[in-house]
Length: 82
Image (cartoon, rainbow, N blue to C red; front, side):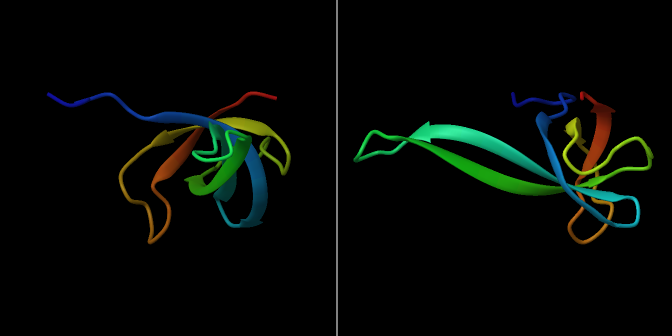
C-alpha cells in the first residue's frame, strides 16, 4: 500500500527566522541535466514550525512532515544537527 504511518523527513539549512515560531528551511538536491548531463543543484523552501530557541540562520536542521499548521506550514523542526 503506500507509506502509511511513515513520516517524511528532510535535512536542510535554515534560511530565515524572521517569523514567530517559523523557520524557512532550504533543502538542496542534485540532479543531472537531461540534455547537457551537467550536475545541477535545486533548492526548495519549506516553512517549518520551530519553537526551539537554539535554531538560527545557517544551522543545519532535520524537518518532518506534519498536519497543516497554517496556510504554508506543513513541517516541524525535529532536531538541530549543527
